[in-house]
Amino acid sequence: MAEQYIDIDSLNIIREKLWAVSNEKKITLEDIQDRTGFSYSQVYRIVRGENNMSVSGFIAVCKALEVQPSKILDFEIEIPKYQPTRKNFK
Image (tube, helix red, strand yellow):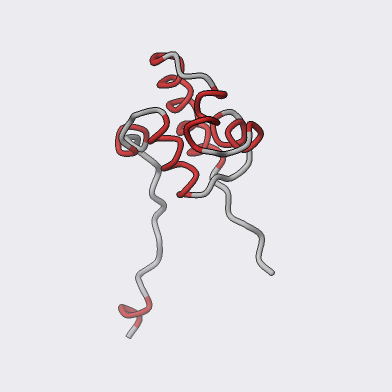
């Protein structure tokens, strides 16, 4: 089975933004736990941890923080130079 892809740099940016919103709005990890129904360890892993997070978990935390996901995901990533697509190999 293939290894799970994890983009640590992007996850760190997302977590920093989630943490900043949490601090700005004074919403604690326990508050997020109450609002999502997740365990404290799940909330910690999403907002402060280093593991990969699911899109559903991310959305739930955004709702708990009363912030649109687009605000958290508003950052640039480096796009690699790929070879032409298979369709263009002909």
